[in-house]
Length: 377
Image (tube, rainbow, N blue to C red):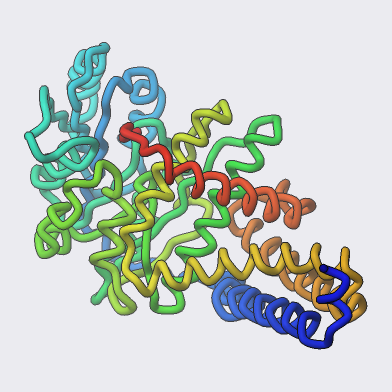
């Protein structure tokens, strides 16, 4: 039956047309969206240093806070505070925070023993911390994150201009041995490529809670997390999806602006995390879901049709030419972006990581149809 279809003129032309279309969509993303990120340069740092409130929600994070909080409290910045919301912890977090408050006058801890009936996860403690903040600029991170430099607060605060309400940062992961670590870091960098590039194109759609800043006034204007309070996650990406626009959003990708944390150590933990992230993305605005869906679908069609057409010997030379041309463009663009994120070790195997993540994300999307994660962290 397949031989009969291939012998007709119609079937090979359809395959080639869809393949070329998916190729064109891929090139649009690489050259129109991602390539400007490779040439992005930060404007000069402003002379003023506006007040910043760093807000952290912590649930049983004693060891992370002990290691990372001093690095946040000793930033090279003249006017900032750190608010840690101790969210129903039953470890020694409260004793650690109490001792650190005696040493650091810019630290303030807030204890919460239970959630409100309709707020679960991080949204309630973050809301409490934000409402307690004294400064107009909020800088959010997690207890397991450490700033990559003593200039982290300064770098993120420098992104605010006269119209800026949102500054997106990069949350990197520690480099360790093993394929899992490389996959996680590639996935993280690829997602960052997307949300940074879309922001530069005037279509901001998400940020990550590991490194995210916005104005307190924007939080109040948006009524906080109330529009998606029923969803356990989304305190970062869903909020940015609703408040960010082409005018009020900036990015910071200098190495001093990064935060760094430990990635998941087992495939099971990472799968659970990815399920939660992908399920939250279904609540993005239609235009954002359409663009992200077009990219993923074009990638899936490109690889699937390449394998099919090569196996059926359909238009072999044009197909190979288009495949190699896309591979070169992808490699050049991705390698430049990865170097900006200090992920140089991932560059040699970009096509491998890209194909692996396509298969992995497809598996997660199918798995999400049968299971919904209930964990907030």
